[in-house]
Length: 428
Image (cartoon, rainbow, N blue to C red; front, side, top):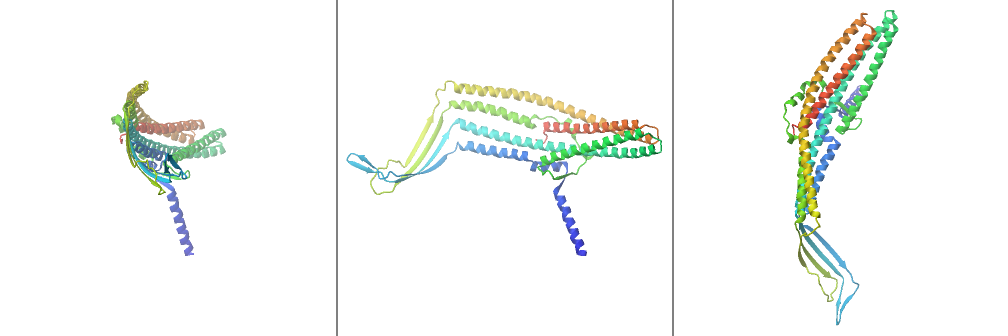
């Protein structure tokens, strides 16, 4: 019997360990770190950086020597070349050869520079994707906590309404209250249950979105180790209003600046179409005959060659190509200036939004406390016969509305903070 108990305890311990391994207990920072390591979109962005590096090396390789080897076998089936009084045998032969070549042009040099800039843009895009993933996780983390808080508040209201319904039903039984009073409270209870179920489904959708961002399986369990009150009290979001906006830290600004540089390089690339291009090669070959008959070997063992290509006339196509590139560069400059001004205006607007959302949050928080007190007061009066069921229903609806406004204001604070953090990119 004792052995059975020990086996049972070991089995339960193993099952508990398995459950702990299948569930993730995450703080906000841990959730963001986990997402940066496992998010699939981020993995794709990282692969784009590697793809850009591979493409850059391919372009660079065109400036370096290219070496190839060849082996040729020929069989003329005993054919002999007739030169009047002489006949020259054409025996079977094998030719071995190697060729080294290199081609140089200004367009190739500019192409390497363009690939380098493309790699820099891929790096910026990777960092931007990391920022977006972290922001998404933060939004979902806060949303989950807020929704859990909403469910908690609604369940508290439901518990209170259930008590009032029991009280009302007893009052109806003794003839103190009418059946319509009990019906009104019953409808309020049913409505509250429906509201709770809807919020629970919304909470599950939020967790599903978080699983996607974290790269988890759909049945993975996530446990949030922080509370909304703890995050809001430790939140330094309002301090963002005192931060200066450094444009160079913004990833969109960095990408746009790279686009301007790319457009400028395109002008240089088109100009190089006027320049000559140089190519050189060295070839070594050796022929081996499979016969002792006298023959003629006309294949030189060593050969070197140079080629200089000088463009002279293109009927204006090169000129128009340069003009097109210059116009594209000017367009990028205009877009750059517009975006620069737009970002500065956006900084002001997002600062206003954050300030307003904090003010609204504080107001809605106080309002919810007041409405809760009013609801509790009316509930006591109802139990004492000094308030009607209609008063309870109306006060309950006002409480739900106040709680909903509080939750919405809280989400607006989080949204405004994340938008301003993304724009400032203080860690960039």
